Image (cartoon, rainbow, N blue to C red; front, side):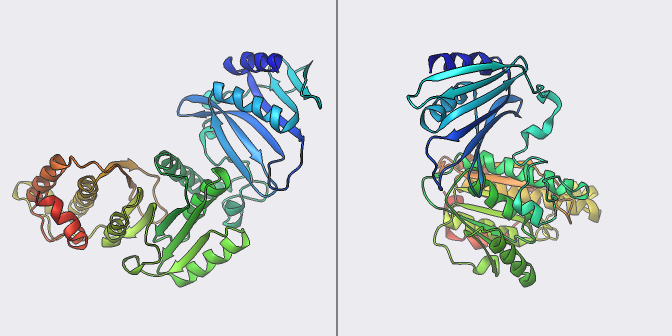
Length: 392
């Protein structure tokens, strides 16, 4: 295998690989992958190799750096496959492994052209245009050939943006267990299905995902789709956020487009469950509209449209601050606009159990005082859990 490793090092370290295919399994197994394809992808300005492991009913992906890729190809050729073809601009290399494990390399004329990743931003998508994905086809975002429907490209882009944010937090969650995930206010559930597809079909994780909503017809439709797609660990339930008690512990809480204090109710649930990750896109923050009061800012507050925007920003800032006080690392990020609202701020919180929160408490109290706020819904619902922190 030394000559194979040397060839791989030359090709991969110099970014010459265009495409690769590993095939001809040594031992066929119904539960194992039957082929692995390899291609370069550009992720956050860094070129990695994406390995696609093709099973009978799914495809799993891994993105590896150069050294990891060489080791992975070596292991796959030793343990699983008798043949590999590596395509470069200079030549195609066919690697053959005989029954005794001895390798030979055949060099042939090149048959593929190298893609320019510098301007092909689609390569950084977790789900790519042109790859048929069952739930996207079922929900009308893709056609049967995997091509994104032109009128649904905004939805396709939104799904990928959401999955990028999930990818950033999933690495910080303990994955050596069954993950319980709740999506409050799931609606039509494009992103709920995307979450399931990413975690199960791409990452191969063990999950239970529940989508919760108050629209019974939508819940029935989503359950029908999940059954049709054999997404057997994805269920949709009719019910209210505040009353949901089916899980005693939850690892991730997602809440997208939950109106007014429904977002706060979801955050309270997440905190009480001590969820490891929270992804929330709030909407329609009305609670503090009639509560904010600051004489100095009266030239702004007297205009309803300005006051509404301010109330929204202040509300999300307070929510982030509360999560920081309770031991979360929080970021407010720009999200792709939802279908029916211009709200595009996503609260991303990851549990870090930081007990040194006095600075956050001081800022929270001063911020509330500045805006003349008291008797907030999230404070009342968190009760002693938050009050004990604020009275330190």
